Amino acid sequence: MVRVLISFPLDDEYVLKIREVEDVDVVKATEPDTILREIEDAEVLYASKITKEEFSKAKKLVWIQSPFVGVDSLLIDEVKKSDIIITCSRGVHASQASDHVFALILAFARRLPELFEDQKKRRWKPRHPFPFDPLDELQGKTLGIIGLGSIGMEIARKGKCFGMRVMGVKSTISPVDYVDEVYSPESIDRVLEQSDFLVLCVPLTPKTAGMIGEKELGKMKKTSYLINIARGGIVDEIALIRALREGWIAGAGIDVAEREPLPESSELWDLENVIITPHVAGSTPHYWDRAVSIFIENLRRFLSGEELMNVVDKDKGY
Image (tube, rainbow, N blue to C red; front, side, top):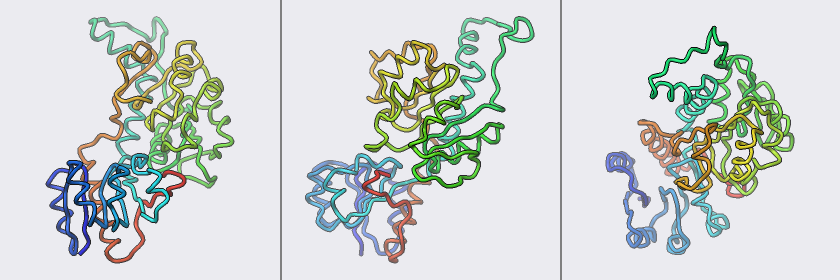
């Protein structure tokens, strides 16, 4: 019998589904003291984070499954140095996160914030044919994607549906479906310089932290838009604010921030060329069905000695 500890407030409906797996003893604990007690006998941990104190008690722990794609809260030094396997829920975000990216892209192209403001003021403002103040279209535009994991690949697929040219950056160069040109991180400038819409969907790691700063923003076209659905720490926020204020780029769609919630004092709230959403790109009514299904499949594999899905490279952070 394998002992499984769930250390976050997962709905009981899903806990019961996990308990249907044969040969497992499933315990749910969300209070710090209870977690410390229960983790001592756990071989499997279903958790979004782990503390140093919890790790010190987890003498039998073999494998941690994250209910999320990001695992930075699990990668404490003690875990990284151990033989503990970490897996994530890669794949749960691809559909809805890519939808959110195009919601932001289309909002800029079709000037929806401006049109919504007109609606609030009961103002019908013609833009075509007289006066000629046109909205934009996506066909023929260049879509740059930094990070070609499951989300990036789905963004690429949808970009081709809109008739866009797709460029991408990934750690190892190889052909990717729906991506016209693939570059290494060392050649990111080519993507920055040509993208009309630049989408960030890389994990936050020591290598990606602050990867979009003043230098990178300065290479983008003045007519381009930055879309960040990854992590706030990937972008130098001070540099981004300057770029938006001084017109280095046309605008930014931000679903994540360096500090969350985004402080009320942040200058980003006041910029008219910014669309802010509160870290909701991954939101869907189907999230937990998908995430728990991945865990249950991995649990089945673990029990039968098969290779687990979505194993994280602890050095790379994803």
